[in-house]
Amino acid sequence: MKSFDTKIRVEYHHTDQMGIVHHSNYIKFFEVARTEWLRAAGLTYAEMERRGVMMPIVDVQVKYRTPSYYDELITVRASVEELPMARMTFHYEIFGEDGRDVASGLTTLGFIDKETRRPQRAPQWLMDVLNREFAKE
Image (cartoon, rainbow, N blue to C red; front, side):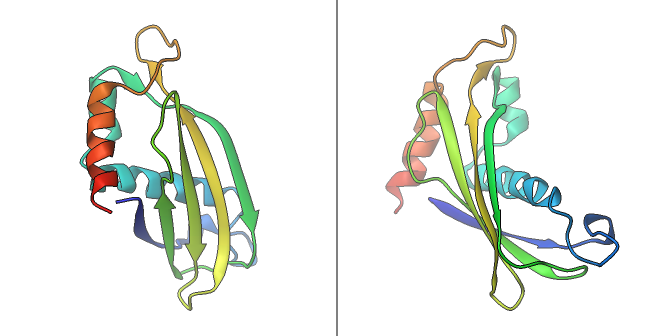
């Protein structure tokens, strides 16, 4: 599984006075999609943290194309194009209910030790899970 689609209903608190999704919420939508991508691969952030690994964002990019609106059911596609080493990059595409291209972007996350907060490589147990997912395609 290199990509995974997540549906999100745009709620009132996601929008501005014009009923359009506020730009800051797209990064939150990325987080939902990234979390669900990992869950579909057989991992959760909670489990990763229990195992002593944290993944802070070190870079985020967003390109806005067309607005999305209150009560719209959007699709957020998260994908991983290459296996990580010390960092993992997720790519995102957001589509409106009618299939229009709403936004795209990426987040790059580093791996750090939960206790020391020092950077580390992706742990072997994580690589084993990701290698299985990449082998499916």
